[in-house]
Figure 1 (cartoon, rainbow, N blue to C red):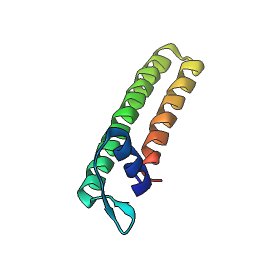
Figure 2: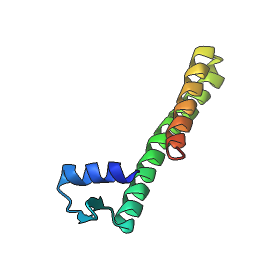
Figure 3: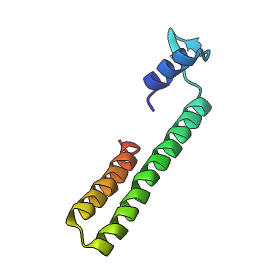
Figure 4: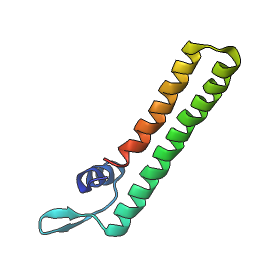
Length: 88
């Protein structure tokens, strides 16, 4: 998360930030905490997509369904996209 995003979230929840040289100061530990929480949430969401991909792949293998296999690929791509957000 950028400092600007953290400042906006802090404002939304009423978290008091110290002003330093005319700008809100984001304490390093707050930044670490929020980035760690965001990463954990991204991974949890990606895991849901990944689990769905595996479920669909198992169905596709058992039924030889290309449509179900395509949905499995889409779910897997979704998991990859969610994880990639943490690398941006």
